[in-house]
Length: 336
Image 1: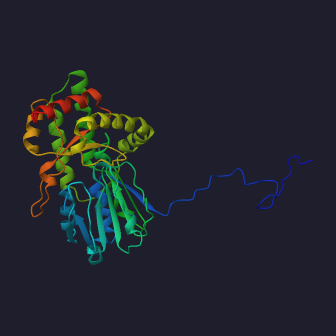
Image 2: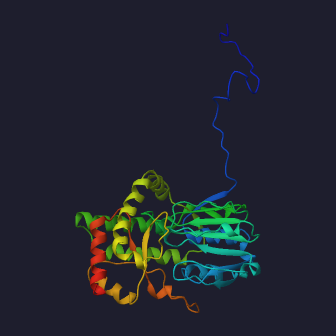
Image 3: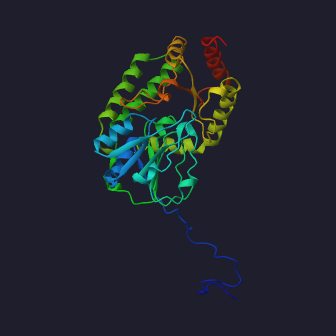
């Protein structure tokens, strides 16, 4: 009779297939992870963690913020060419650099399997992706994203690495731009759903918030508001991406030949490469359709993508009828 007496079992009781009970164990993935306020803050954290002394190889199709941050830290960098289908070929160039900077454009993920034996560091810019993972188990790897680009969050970025990051560089308070952006987002929502405020009110706040983040040099934590909104984002991520995939199918019916991110696993924007892009954009403005351009030209860099890419948002704010309306106007502009 066992009763309630204290009994010491051997570490592996022969009657049990496995130990049951106690606090749950966790294997871990060997990565060091941090949350910052933005993608550019994550990039600054990386550079402040010792990578400012390394030589970088950057794609020649990128956001101007990236070279600006590198110049801020006086980093040595050069460029490799990105083709119109978003593919690239670095050949033997990588042997002259310490870090290869790869952008996973518009939700599609680059095949890095050929770099598994490379001694170089691989930096994955997942700005359009909700997940930051070392898919190829690269020994020297860093990845980061930006939730501002793929969700309604006003701030937030995950950075993960196979090396230790100097997380003490992260200010535990919130970035001022995040508070201002949330105020602008609320006013925009009320403008569209309750006929209050004015368009100028939220546009002014958005512009002020963008100026704040452009001027910011300190690294901040993700805001509390975004941290809680991030939980909701992941809770509903399957439903969200189902909507995006449905919208994507509608756009594919008419625009597939011009689509550049055909392998997007987590679609955020439907990116197309079109001639006469800027005139098309002005035409769509007249119909209250404001499609983003990724990205404005950077002085000293030549790539046709800067002149031809335009992106259609596919998130759950929009339905299939909205996609058909956009397609109809694009076809009308080109006389199709």
